[in-house]
Image (cartoon, rainbow, N blue to C red):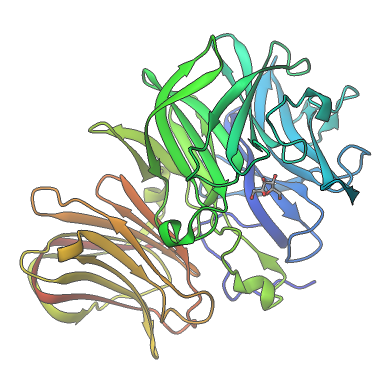
Length: 469
Ligand code: FRU
């Protein structure tokens, strides 16, 4: 069908058409970033999952390649579900979940097994004759026989480590660890990590990677408390140690990866400079996405890729620096007292805005974005709560809601770095220790930007650039 351009993003990756969800197979290979994604090319709703494929030199401008995986084998006929990519002997390998539905008997209504495909040219992929390489009979006791998916493979300590999303069959999400020397023969090692009872009843899209002397474990739990996490689905990351001998992860601290509405199933890769980058699906199960209800012929986008850095002992997510090459039409306001509402003489629907301020005695201070006829999206600091609020109740059509993130002032000041792109808003606080991502659907004419304070605040610096590909 036709693709309606109304809410199409400018500097974020979407499918050319149809539906997309999770990022898959994110890898820096042969001088370029490859990003695959869960994709239904036939409709703007979830359906038979293919792997869409795009490449980029800078993580901002993407070129589409042909669909990499199609559900056409007996072991993946109802979907090539999420997974990862790895380079071995110069070749690009994709490791994914073959999904097959079964008439429901004894509660088992689908089978999920892990499969491998390989390519010589990074365009056409051949599924291995040995598939599935990790089968239902390889699932250990104390793990669901049905939810068994999203293999993320990393080379750690001279071996391939595969982490898989699972649950214990009794209401707790967990991740399983398998290892291999050749990507084909896999051995179950242990339950890598498990919910303490507060982190969902099933875990999806786990990822495990080294960071300095520690390891980071990221995962997307399902059916968490929506009063705590905004949605029933969320993404958390834990920093800790990997016990290679026992195959377990020892968490030292955990944090939310995003405090907004639309961030799920993040996946990481590392580039040739050792930079660790994370990208997520900029939506989430349970968060409505109007472009499919409107039948716009497409649905779903990726977040801005984010670099993972450790600052003052905490894990931070910063927009990749490549985005700065796309800044156009710089606008600056410096050192002024802010009281009430000030309309900026510039606006837009695709831009970056950096606001550095001292709240002083203001009860609330922040920004109104995509302002127009009765529409506005609010991002502001609340002094007595020490939170930043993302309010999309008057953003336009589409889902509503108010998200809150805890924030600490740094020497009395706060920096908000905001990325707006047609239907998306991403807010990075401080050095990226807190991020908020959400979709909004204002009308095209709502392009105003305002700054406001209840009380008097001091703006050190406000900078804005259009971002154009
Ligand atoms: C996460 C997920 C994965 C699964 C895929 C199916 O969003 O549910 O667990 O592999 O989406 O599209």
